[in-house]
Length: 403
Image 1 (cartoon, rainbow, N blue to C red):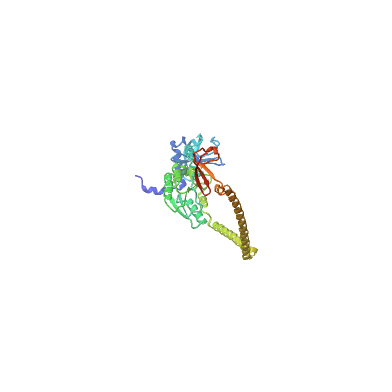
Image 2 (cartoon, rainbow, N blue to C red; image 1 turned 90 degrees about the vertical axis):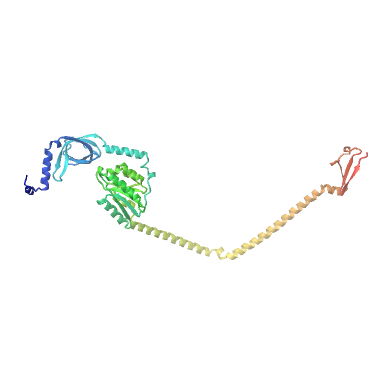
């Protein structure tokens, strides 16, 4: 058995340890000359002629470096999400103690990686269902008292949101749901955070977001689950993920997009000092308008006080009354004259009618002879022995025709 005391003499510097690990890895055959497939991200082409990128699949990622990539005929147009096959070996960078793939050859397998292909399918599906339409989006309140935030409780993001908000309006309130925003479990955390904050009545609007990072760091916000949680939210959602140039599925379905988490605070929280200035300006403007109206009304009142008709109002009324009496007298004369004329015409018509009245004719000595109720106008209408009625103005007699 080895003496355990010897272990006390084995003291290394960090660099020495990293160098030994590197030599160990370099000597293992299985870590040399193999192919590896995945999607590229965090691509950086340096002027020195070296290429750095991350190769990833659905579960893991590894850093890669291609020294003097042009000499190796490695494509110079790699994009986020490109699916590639590389040939290389495992090595370790002693300075940082991180292991990486030393790439000697790289070949593109397709223009878009599986993740981006899936994302494009989701976008088309959501677009067809109208999930991106402006008409569907909820109205984000202009003035909020309480803002919910779903993000990581650690890091600069939450501090930036709160500090920015408090500077703009010290009375603003924040309710934070601490969530993982990348990696395993982050999707469930974000979804649960949105659901929980929706149940808090005093919250006016919810910020869902995180700071910048690689595309794989932000990928949880491209998930269907998070998108549906945003769509199902009863409260307005502001998506504030990554940097200004990052556009994710959450940005398209949210009710408002902020380019950064800090920008979300600026959008949702008006500057209280500026608001006070605006209110003061508007108050002064309203006061000036009211003063102007008061002065105008005073001048109008003064003009009316000096008006001839107002000064002589009683005389004006008496004059109008006299005029009204005169008009009434004239109207009465006209009515009387009109009535007399109508009565005269009526009397003439009455006299005319009296002249043709049968009774009036009988009074003048005339008679009417009737047979069987019919007036006899011709002697040939009667025969001997018939009974006739002769009508006088004051009665009638019956007679029998002899000849």
